[in-house]
Length: 449
Ligand code: UD1
Ligand code: MG
Image 1 (cartoon, rainbow, N blue to C red):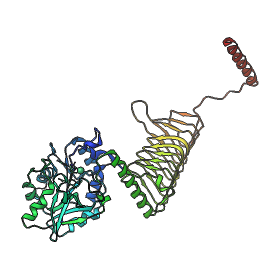
Image 2 (image 1 turned 180 degrees about the vertical axis):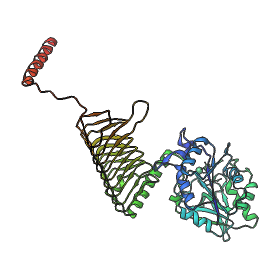
Image 3 (image 1 turned 120 degrees about the vertical axis):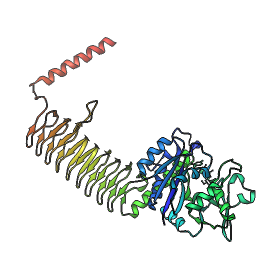
Image 4 (image 1 turned 90 degrees about the horizontal axis):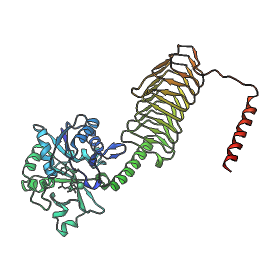
């Protein structure tokens, strides 16, 4: 059956105490709303509509990045969840099928749960959970016939507040029915808001059926404060670690590895302690990342070995069997098969050909203060330790640069390039020099006394 998803994300999130709208705060190196959108797109919806309000332009940009097919509508004034859905529905005009309403600040909803809701046989389906501490959640009032109504905490009687079956906020209904019910909402309640939750009682009054699908409380966790965001991060990491282990990845010290929402690691890869994944990292089977690496926007191929203490930044592409060692930073560079970069090196905006060895302390001087420039190094080259490659510059295949060279001119294939001052030896000068320096030190000490 065709499904459309509406994601509510207009709220400011006052309790975050932030200039950033709540749904753009990060969890697993991705904005909160990216998590909700990932769950939504996993069920392959025909349409996705995001309701934005506070800092709508920033929200729109994040949505464009993480879910380009989604439409964004603006709810200028936040008059309640029912009003938010009413703002989105015109975009679904003519759509036939089920509509799922999600919250942008609820990142742990599983696609399986959403599928269960779409498959449930009732006119309106609500995702509920048994709350350990029901707090201010809306309460689900049930009968033998199923769900009768949802009562908001503010409007609930003491008896209703004693109910522990709570509303997660996720609702699913047939598009035409939802549109009709939402059009009939009023704001005659304690908050003076248009409650989406009121559509349940309205549906029942029309003789329609309503049902509850339940899930674990952890799945419906919403983020309202920085403390909740920190707890959610811990939960996200715990799940990501467990998933990686299940998928056949070795984590030497799982509790010290931090994943991003989109981290992808193949089977039999080995990840050492204290490795941090930023967004956009893919690691092929059998690759090894040693302790204390920081990786983002990079790809590591089969048989490659990275670290300890390496930093791979966006655009770093390591082909098979590449070795990157300690204190190496790589940005926007392609390293072909078998390249070795062992120690203390910066490669930025470069391409390095197969089997080339980059000596310790090599730096691609890629930035001239205004523009980024490219360095091209051929296959089977040998870059001597402490070579400065002043880009734009090319080093041909099989060429060699002498240690300490500053390479400003292209090096032809097979050539040796020496770009450093010639050494001069002065016989016997060392002792004389020392004597002179000691005398100077004594003179200064005497002057002070
Ligand atoms: C809502 C539910 C409550 C449920 C709880 C679960 C209603 C009336 N109440 O209450 O039953 O237990 O969620 O967390 O639905 N939003 C908009 N525009 C608006 C209002 C809200 O986009 O005009 C968005 C918010 O940004 C948020 C979500 O909708 O992502 C929920 O709104 P919120 O104000 O947090 O609702 P609650 O009072 O928590
Ligand atoms: Mg809320």
